[in-house]
Image 1 (cartoon, protein in one colour):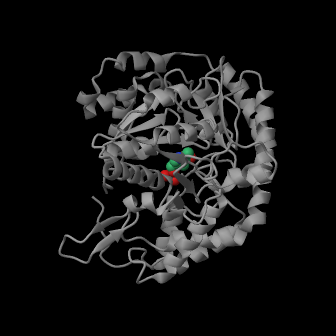
Image 2 (cartoon, rainbow, N blue to C red):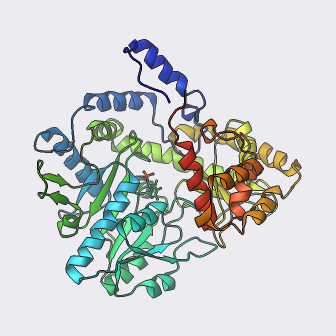
Image 3 (cartoon, rainbow, N blue to C red):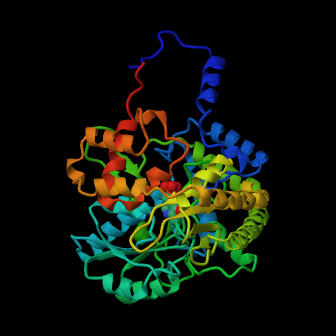
Amino acid sequence: MKTLPAQGQKAADILQQLQDAKAQDLDWQSGRAMGFVYVPDPETQRVAKEAFMAFLTENGLDPTSFQSLLRLENDLVAMGAAHLRGDEHTVGNFTSGGTESCMLAVKSARDYAADRKGITAPEMVLPVTAHAAFHKAAHYFGIKKVLVPVDPETFKADLDAVRAAINENTVLIVGSAPAYAHGVADPIREMGRIALERDVLFHVDGCIGGWLLPYMRRLGVDTPDFDFSVPGVTSISMDLHKYAYTPKGASLVLYKSKEIRRYQIFTCPDWTGYTIINPTIQSSKSGGPLAAAWAVLHHIGDEGYLRMAKGVHEATQRFVQGVRAIPGLRVMGEPEMCLVAVTSDELDIFHVIDEMKVRGWYIQPQLAFGEYKENFHVSMQHSSVGLVDDMLAALRESVEAARKIPATGVGKNIAQMAQGIDPSTLTDEMLENLLKLAGIGGSAQQGLPDRLQQVNEILNNLPVELNGALLTAYFNQMFTPTQD
Ligand SMILES: *Cc1c(COP(=O)(O)O)cnc(C)c1O
């Protein structure tokens, strides 16, 4: 097991080791990573770093001791509320990311319903396209998920199914603007009407779209309605670390009024230490992400964001047109922002992803789910807008290369063999054998092979419970203390 060095090491050596550690990482600076990263211009990156470091040590735990952080947070919430057409009653908080924002909105809804309506067996209505963060909230906070389908062509929530899913225990309806997978928004206006009719809170997940969609609307693009101007919307999550291009650890959760936000705040006077009052999940927290977000918003400014939105929108249009012109590929639904899901009815999309990787591009695999087909996902963003033609050329080549790879069906066969495994009895040994079959030998810390078609094909053909159990076991092994 690795242990602490007896004597402290030289700063330069340590920093060099840290740089070296990144050698195998996704190359986010290239503009060829179409997911995970949202990269602004170099000057904005510099401002973000300096602002982050300036508040590295300040602690957001106590806003009365660090009043600077309270002010910066209230500034960001005000700017976010105005951006989403809130009014003088709109309130909110800065959080560590979209997941925390979504989880807090769910927790607030649960406790609001318990207090106001006496609901003790809470349920939440989720379209299948709702982000995993809501499943996590349901899991952590003991809420029953009621999943509703989306239209298999448009990927928008089925309104009749939403209506039918609501009952006396429903504490929250969730809609996305847009949902991550296919970049399509739910019918928020109609869902708001249903929420009002049934007197249920309604959260709009604007984690990825909240910042960008209003700019697209101002550019004259036909964008979906989703903000506080829509009757029935009671809370919205909006990440800053996506299309506001701030460093990670930055999101907002906003509420129509203090009446609901009150239930987000956790106060603990009943222990022997100082009284804890936490509006969000974290307690001690660096002021870095907050200060960096504040700095980036001020540095880019309204006109800057409008300009960046124009670039991203035009690049997405060109990309979608280009993909539609490639035989064998099919864009799923009508992307409404800059997130595009692409599938194929004739070739193995997982081979296309591998071939893109060979050519220096990272695109995300999304597995099939029920009647919704497997695909690859592309998030267009600022640092990629100049590379659309390169990307389309790489995609054309990748499709041709994928066509030439003979289908073996090995992945499907392995999945077939594994079908019978009971996820609750999965052992380390079974996992190891499966990994070997899938072509992933060695330890889980060594990373994955370059080509993942077979792994994706296996996962794509397994029952979801087994899939989940396998990936859990794999991560449980991956995080093993360093042995040397
Ligand atoms: C990214 C995202 C989230 C979760 O946000 P994290 O910042 O990754 O925690 C939630 N909803 C949508 C639609 C997202 O795109």
